[in-house]
Length: 149
Image (cartoon, rainbow, N blue to C red; front, side):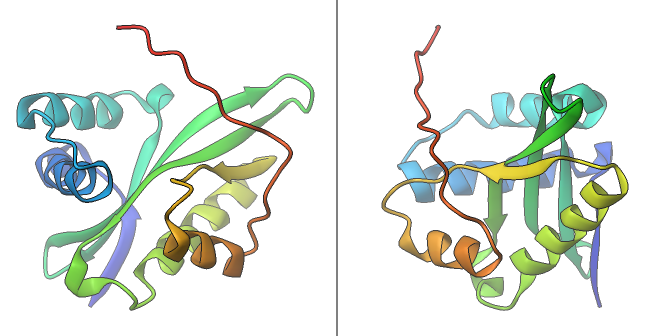
């Protein structure tokens, strides 16, 4: 039976392993296992950093959604950002992400979150199709970045 739930500190290692797979698959980036585990634990130990929702099958995390929070002083409400999504390959195209997103949406409605936003690689047409299907619209915002090492 599939279970959708908030991640717990004991999930850090599995979440980190999924993050390593996601980085390699999406950006051909090889992350440090140690840093990935520290990063996952940091989120799970400090709700200010965000939270994970996970999909679990037979005590194995087969999908996850990472959400961070931005405060809108204009609206006096939170804006949630879907920061990372990962579904293990054998479980893709089976509605796992949709269930994770709907779980997030239900929590957001209870907490009166203003909006749920996300960003994605411009070339990820599959994800874009899914997000449009779920009601996401492109905005007038452009995301810029300056790395501070």
